[in-house]
Image 1 (cartoon, rainbow, N blue to C red):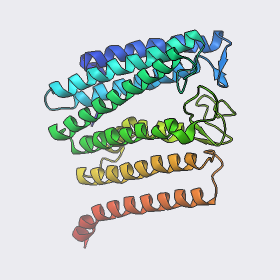
Image 2 (cartoon, rainbow, N blue to C red; image 1 turned 90 degrees about the horizontal axis):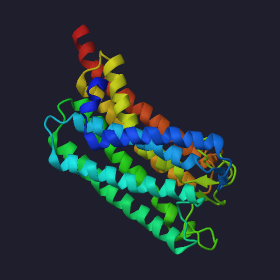
Image 3 (cartoon, rainbow, N blue to C red; image 1 turned 90 degrees about the vertical axis):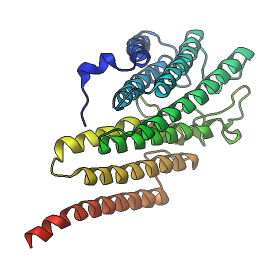
Length: 308
């Protein structure tokens, strides 16, 4: 399993044009962070579009690469990818437009326009979710020849959908902060905009639903990256063993995503876990290590038998 960067220019064109545009936007937003002193909900006003632009670069490039792994082109998958681009463009236009206006883009119902823009973003994400799901279905049906790559791609696409779903609690009635015109929040137990970790801004005084959302979304990169590392540095492992290890990693990653969301919903900061959270993490680590060990032990048995 390898990535041929030289062929990237020939990957899905709308996705790659979008990636290039988001890379430029990331630079513009970074300049904005440095030169624009405005602060919104406790953070530099251009930080949110910067983070979204970087995330879209990774997301678009990864999807384009995944489509390039198909044994033959799929019109359905390419159409769905174009829909993803269109919805992502709508999302980023609203975010940047609201920054220019000095307004928040999320949970903002302080005016008819702000409320309409937030509704448009919500609709765009729903359509993007469906298009992403369709891409996943096509990639599973078409069967990527490399089994390890197919496993990593399948788990990555599925878990990234889980990451999208992890954002749903942010807009549920229980997340309304009691502030007129604000219809949701990513922090739990505290108001948005309080003390947070550097760059990401995740709350250090309460729960933060963005953590599980972030981790789940980036399974799209994490699982394929693990597959690449296994193919490069674990050359003694046969394909079946690598596939099984990827399944173990995917299962553990999914549980971690749910666990982080569960921790946030309990109003608990990421870096201040209680005994229950620590016990759950320990159980996940032990279970994952045991499963990986069993996979490796099963792989070694034929060798031991021959040696005997």
